[in-house]
Length: 190
Image 1 (cartoon, one colour):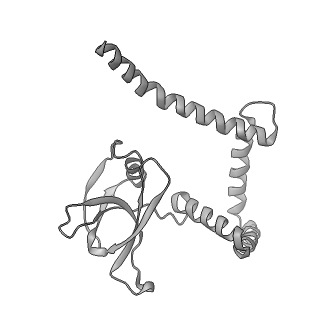
Image 2 (cartoon, rainbow, N blue to C red; image 1 turned 180 degrees about the vertical axis):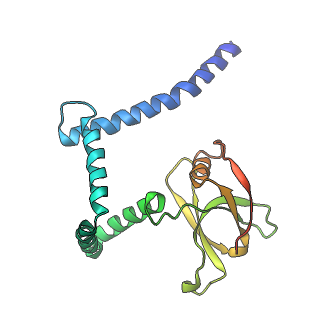
């Protein structure tokens, strides 16, 4: 009986991630197809990808930048819309934009003896504008979620990690079960 349970659990580890991935992709495709009211499954998703790519191409041209900049300024002035728009824009830029912010993985020592550490991403090298130039800000994502915390720590408690930022993010979000390949230790950042 123990062996059968072991086989079942091993099968669950293989089937569950695949089933969840297929289900989420199916939901995304059918939702987008429903919005566009297209009768062919997946066409709405394909049309959406093409349109987003086309907007990205247009946003790269000098003339379109002015148009997008105008709409950006208008949306930044509307009270409630500004909060949603700027937050979504900043979050996307932090991960994939030209102003990518989560590209410096670090270890932050939380205790004075440097025994307790957390993985995070350096988001600001100095807080001189707030009057604490010897401090930095780091973002600590939470495991199995999209939330996280911004903490302010003395710069001497932050050690850079020579690892791919995407791998470190996957490691944190997975609760530490995903492997991360570190290249070599970096000197402490100050």
